[in-house]
Image (cartoon, rainbow, N blue to C red):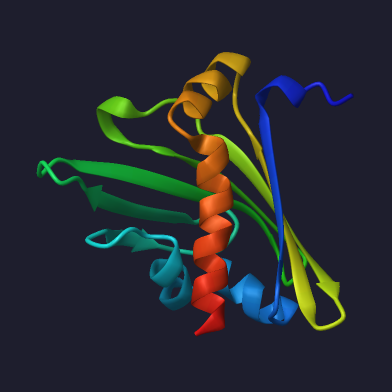
Length: 148
């Protein structure tokens, strides 16, 4: 058993697209913004390289804006991507380390998201806000984007 089992989310999906295409959807701005960001979101910074950052903000229906930051840790094209993801500003907490693997399955691509929260408490709080469903929904949104 993993020593992170009480603070991790794992979501997997097979996409009907080549591995290089799916990898690009995560690591190229023009693709990532199309499926990752909710409508009305704005990118402030994009530098997809190890140590680089993607900052974006999302507006809520009541006019508030929330900032998010992704720090790219490892980019091993087209097999693996590792990044830290978190909120910025007054709601900032410890980032979530996300490992994404891209496996070729005969022209299709199996993507596995492995999110590891800083603590079991952080996982429980995220789970209460729908983080498990959110990971699966992200893969669903990516599937819709790739189908276009």
